[in-house]
Amino acid sequence: MHIVRSLLLAAGILAANTLCAQSWVIGPFARPSEAPVIEPNPFYYFTDPITQDKTLWDALHAFNPAATIAPNGEVAVIFRAEDASGAAKIGEHTSRLGLATSKDGLFFTVEGAPVLYMQNDAEKAHEYPGGVEDPRIVVAPDGTYVMTYTQWARDRGQYTVGIATSKNLKDWTKYGPAFKNADHGRYDKLRYKSAGILTELHNGRIQAVKLHGKFWMYWGEIQIHLATSTDLINWTPVLDKATGLPRVVMGARAGHFDSGFPEVGPPPLLTRKGIVLIYNGKNSLAGSPEAATSQAPNLPAASATANIPSAPDMALPGDPTLHPGAYSVGEALFSASDPQKLLARTEHPVLTPVWPYERNGQYAAGATFAEGLIAFQSQWLLYYGAADSVVGVATAEMQR
Image 1 (cartoon, rainbow, N blue to C red):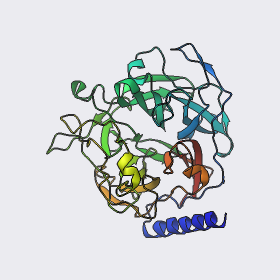
Image 2 (cartoon, helix red, strand yellow):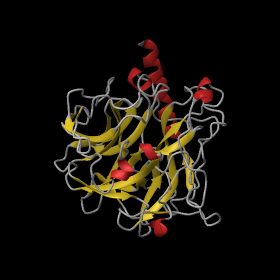
Image 3 (cartoon, one colour):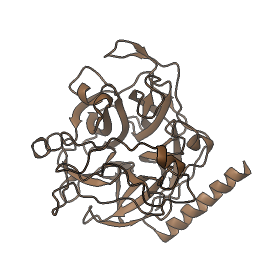
Image 4 (cartoon, one colour):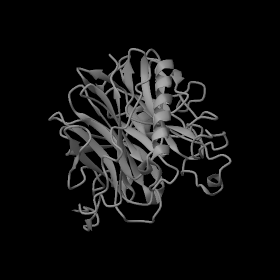
């Protein structure tokens, strides 16, 4: 216990020092609880509309949460729930999205049935049998909730960012892949995930915002890219003029917590200093025993439709203070005048696996994987998946 508290103190000092040196950073973050705020429930079941089986949809893992404010003013978290089907391996279980609400952001009530899942609908080919994963949520200017999430067609090895909307967080309309109408279907075979739409703090709440006449979305893992939209539904990747490929705006850094690769976290926030993107960084596996046995994600080689490498770059040296492969949270600043321009990013993570529930779980290397950020009662609440198993929260005071 003394060792853990010392680690927490050191992490807090490090985050505070980072904040002092970089005034644009949101934070420092602290955990208000020594336990997760959402855990799996082995008793909830619903009838799967495809198989017609009674399914314990939330029995195995509950993690990777989006966050927003519900219509009644409560904190709402939509999280990825895995059942116990499939092989005992990451990516082999079936995922659905559950809804939890809270009056204080710490103690949650989980709905008994998922709110977004695979059905016999137009998106079945994109979502079955793997499921729906890793949501991010923004509020449109008209009050509509807009969700980006991963559609995982496991048998085809295909994953995309799907778009869905709702008025109440329970009933969702799916619109399919974000890029399906871009450039006459040029991106139909592109595998991409992790997308956050640009927001701003408006009347005390975070909502989607247009910048230079359009909405912006940061997307991707391995490398981070940009896309734009006029309606929050149909998106077009921002291309590199020299190559004609989706432009890379941020990649891995040697010797840092993001030396394996960066991945988009919660929806980015437009501030007076610029666009703050909270993101997830994977520490490199280079030189570790895990590198010899790890399998790279099934990504396409770079082609006319993607500037994405065929495997994560694990050749860079990692951060020796972190476990190889560990996921930590960092922050990056992009220019508001040119959202493609990276101005700065934190030298050290603002949140990293410390507590047992963040280091022991489905993801053995440890993970604090952020996907939800809200403003609530004069605080920032950052919701994250811990070790791909449960949901945690960290808080930060809002700067005045």
